[in-house]
Amino acid sequence: MASLSGKVAIITGGSKGTGLGIAKAYVKEGIAVAITGRNSEALASAKTELEHLVPDAQVLTLVADNKNHDVPGQVVAQTVDKFGRLDILINNAQEFRTGKSVQDITWDDMQATFESGFFATWRFMTAAYPHLTDTEGTVINMSSGAGVQAVPNHGAYGPNKEAIRGITRIAAKEWGKDKITVNTINPYVASAESERYEREFPEVIAEIMKGIALGRIGDAETNVGSLCVYLATEGGKYMTGASFDVDGGAFIRP
Image (cartoon, rainbow, N blue to C red):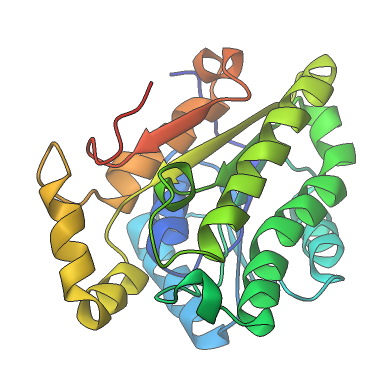
């Protein structure tokens, strides 16, 4: 792979789970990362972990709630002010409101899900666009098989993730002239959130595990992080508007 050393990435929701796994893969490649999250202690712990992994890692931590409309512009500005550029945007942060049938979903569930997910993704993309045109950058948005496969009891989360896939495809066509690639990843990897969900809904996880062709849950750094690395390299820059299922064959589709 071509060297990515010196590039700069924003990873929303980067203090744990999938986001932290991507951050680990990125700092190993010499990419400076700005990671966001709502909890300052979790961010500090993630920064320590990343710097232990790569002692000279460049890590900026920013306390941010994606539901705040001003956050994307602030995060992008602070990142560029710190590192001087922006090459990669990873939209990963998301509130996880599930476990309800469609008729039981509240307006608060819908609003929190879409504000933290789809609308924040759009706002971050818009804020990052001028900088990504300068660097012929990379956007990677996290979607989910919950939307692609219409998983029951995900009536707020699934449609929100499908909306993210939709805007990704449109941006890929519009931004191709700027040599910006825009893709989505549908991950199923172990995280604090997946572990919480397993405790609350063991029967749902048991059914999901039956359908995973490889019979195991993936690893955030090894499986998702490595793909995020590749998509930012010269080799990966000929793929755009695509949706990558990183789920062990849980949702094999045409």
